[in-house]
Image (tube, rainbow, N blue to C red; front, side, top):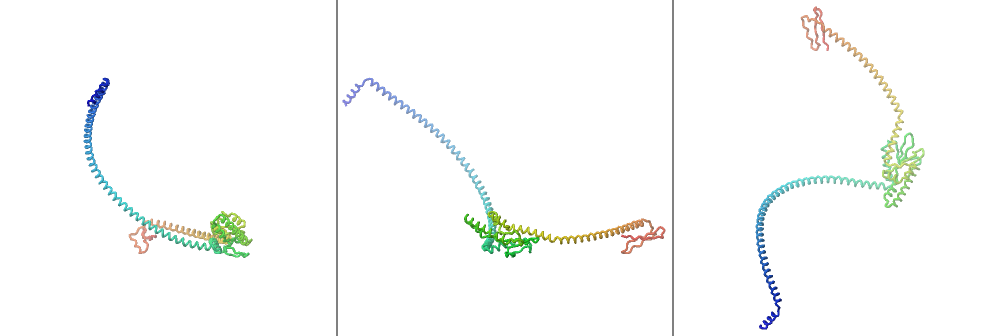
Length: 408
């Protein structure tokens, strides 16, 4: 211990006074710094305490204000609860009324819809019944079409069908005796129909055959090549048929120089003129006219008008004779009317004379009535029943008595 004290003393002795002074200044500065720090810490704690107390006061004030606001909010919430309760009850009542009205409307609408649906179903059933009847008719028509197809598939029956339609048109348009069916010509051929022309002209020939097989082949062609081949075959068949009509039925002096080729379909006739114009032109050059049902009907009507005009001309002399007889009757009627007029004139003259005599008698009676006669103290006798009343007058001298009878 003594050694340490001695060493420390030696150490202090070895330190210069300047260093001691510097160390004392540093120590003093540290002390001052500690004191300043302590003072600042005290001030800081005081400020923090003041700030804490201030914040505590503000917190109390805010808490009081919040409590007040909470109380006000509770009052407002209670008022709003009451208002909302009243509004909710009103809303519930209104919703109940709306629901009741809507339920009534829905029920009435459902009733009307049910009634309308029932009526629609009833009408639908009626229409279904009509459709069933139409379907039955369609099935019957289909059977008829199948039968017609079977008829048309046979060449003889198909010819009979076309001829039947042609005969119906001719028979409906012309009187009996103006046409003939299947009449034999001098060359042994038998055309389907011949129509007698007026004024002794040769009859008109109508043929009702048509190459329907080639036409059906055109319709059933599945490719352009097959259609072209079928069209060529149809053209050849038509040309052969036109040549046969021209050679068999166009006889000089026995038939007309023009014949009709009847086509029993308007659509075939139209397509024939549209797509096979060379065939039509060849028929015209061969003096064969291709006619459809409407054109044949028109031609028949024209022929009927010509026949009627020819009959009128044939009966012209009879009409003239009847007119002459009618004029004689009119002359006799005029003579008799004039005689009757003369008789009426004589009768009028006699009536005028009778009227003149009656006027004279009336005037004379008036003059006699105007004379003044005395009754002579005696009263006139009363008239008998059924006799005209009489007036008895007496002259002034009492010697002349007149009896005047009133005539109606």
